[in-house]
Image: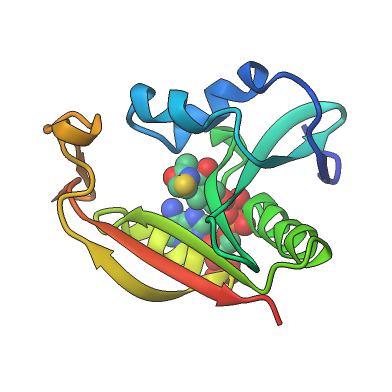
Length: 158
Ligand SMILES: CC(C)(COP(=O)(O)OP(=O)(O)OC[C@H]1O[C@@H](n2cnc3c(N)ncnc32)[C@H](O)[C@@H]1OP(=O)(O)O)[C@@H](O)C(=O)NCCC(=O)NCCS
């Protein structure tokens, strides 16, 4: 695949994107609870879905959460994630949001770099968010760090 990715609002069945969602979610039970929520943007190259980003409400006015995003493994690191996030900023602004939140594992150093490179800053940590009681296996290790705690980041959409 060599074309330029186009990002658009996804209108098809969410089940069709489940393999992409699973790249970013270690708990099938958790994914079942939110797969169908909110709005999803999809990045396409030559009609193939190569990445996605899901936005859901937080229940607080003017605020939206980037709930799940992923880029096809063969195309990671080529700028598609940044393109999806920028499209999500525009989409959220057009719907009146002024703040976007995202949560990820403290263990995932790569994601922490990605989210800070695209404009997010850390705001809070939830200890023991990713444990068997919340649907996560207790044997996941990322970059040598046990998957356990969650960090929240946010950005002002201006
Ligand atoms: C995280 C993810 C969505 C990033 O998308 P991407 O298309 O690979 O990212 P980009 O190519 O747009 O990278 C943007 C910047 O982030 C950096 N970056 C992206 N992934 C990174 C990683 N794993 N480690 C370090 N830096 C990373 C890039 O180097 C680039 O930095 P630069 O501005 O200095 O050049 C993608 O790697 C992915 O799908 N990962 C698996 C699923 C996942 O963990 N999703 C997020 C959790 S919800």
